[in-house]
Amino acid sequence: MSSPHDTVRRTRFRAFTLIELRVVVAVIAVLAGLLLPALARARSTAVRTRCLSNLRQVALAARLYMDDHQGELFHHHEGRVLDDGTQVEELPVTVAEFSGGGSGNS
Image (cartoon, rainbow, N blue to C red; front, side, top):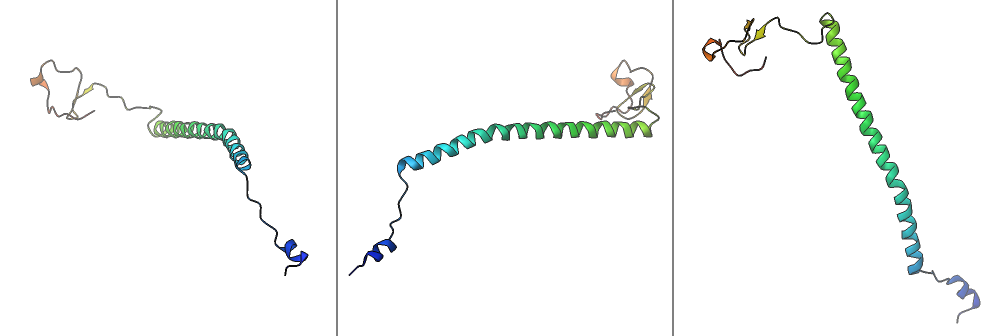
């Protein structure tokens, strides 16, 4: 036999309805919609900051190079430098006049 006190103890758990679940999903979608533009702005700011940091490093390297080389940013040769490293005043006119010839960069 069941007493009235037993029915109080047997409280039935109520399940979520389909409407309630849809409302929760809609709220989450709205919050995500508000959050995504902020994340995109943060990513854009991070890219810009990284770029500025790289530019600062290049400028610092150029400054240090100039300090070591009497204020010159690049070493200038007086004449032309051939691929084998020899210096000449004017470039040779024919291929036979080139000494060394290699394919390196100077």
